[in-house]
Image (cartoon, rainbow over all chains, first blue to last red; front, side):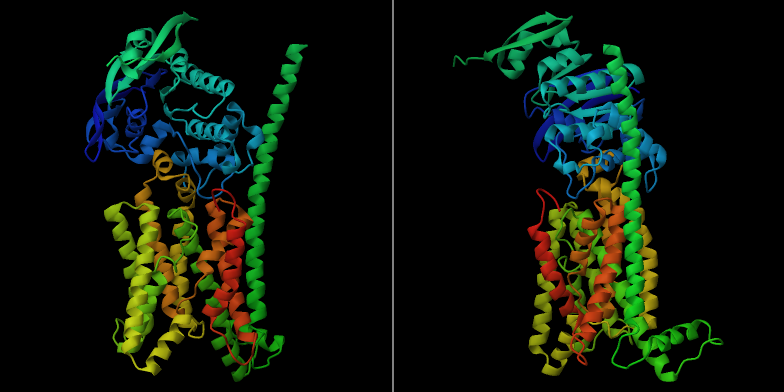
Length: 259
Length: 364
């Protein structure tokens, strides 16, 4: 599955959030989207599966414009993990994960849906919580449930909006390993918005750096995550080192304004 | 040693998965048992209610009448018993059950698609619009359908109000907040209209309006029963068929969209279908509050959050509550029959307070 975004423009009334953003995602590729708060990372992800409708620009999946696809067709190809998830009525963890089978099913879940949900439950290590109520879980656990729901969707592309924001360090790494493994073993590709530059550096094949709704730089982690780029986009002084043949970023402090 | 331990932990995980599946199957199975139990309870209630009444008939006589109507050759019934049981008691209890089912499922659907635990046919203004329609018919003698003047008028106004909510939602985006707020505005608008009409009407006619508005099952006969059965037979399957979508929608519009659901369309469709149910009930009974609000909460307490069970459970609980309330209303101070709307309010309000008090953090 090749995902292409071309000249995407999105605005809320008169405020432009995304300004001619383009990107390409190959099969098995993990793309990290980075940038300060409010640069449009989440908006970009939500435009990709038509949760939001961009003003102009095209998004294609293997050459097919997603505007020519039904929501169900899109949902079978693109899985989405929102940043925060809230249930307004009680639902068990297992039922929440089963929702991911909706794009493949009719009006109720089949036994093969249940089998698939069980497999994913094990993959993300939530077996103990299966029958608990979703709202009773911690933020981190909820985030894993939502990831599981997207995985059981069996989409070829995962769109992840800060999938690790509520997780402790071990869980962050575990989640990233799962995504990496799926990319390698099942040819799934992923677009993930991340705040932690080191997670992006370590787990993304390529990085898209956004600033004020525009693409500031894109490419391999070493070429994008440079001291100059980070200073220009985030206003932060850093030292970039190499570890395990990936860049490793040490934060030094905010850039001092000299007037 | 280390690898052995890993093996062991791997094994426990596999067993664990089977255990979870078994647990889930049992969890689902229990829900079917609850629904079955509620159905049996409903049948038992209907069976008991037909034997109760001011005119004393033995249980044997009552069932002879019922069987007589199916197998006229084998069973005999006196004319009086036939009139009391077949023409009055049976349609009344059956109408009570069906009306309760309709209000219950409509309330459950409105709550879930508007993501608002306070949504109900009453709070969305549909009942008060129907009340206004009835008031127009009673006070001015104007209406849409000749002999079914009052019912027809109530029905048309109930539909107008729900179309208004859907239209506002379509114009401004179908967010739950907008729909609920529009509903409240509509409720106040039609209440004011009714008050205005009453203000200028003579007192006998006003009494007629008040009688209609408090709600009663006394107008129920086989004809009304056929109409309502038909509406429910069409509408309930549509709503239950959408129940998985409702589950997904309660995780938020964005998530639902990302899982392939056309959220606005589903919300509009289910609002129209459930308003249709409400309109066809309110048209014959007048305003019966609280069933649509309370039944879904009780159902959720019993069967959990899966809407496949919540919808059917709400229907069954609603039927039990309404028919049960009517039995109490008829027999609590004979020979006076209390208005059913008053009865459901007296029963519903304490239940509602209980629900508010035990409300869990963040959701219902």
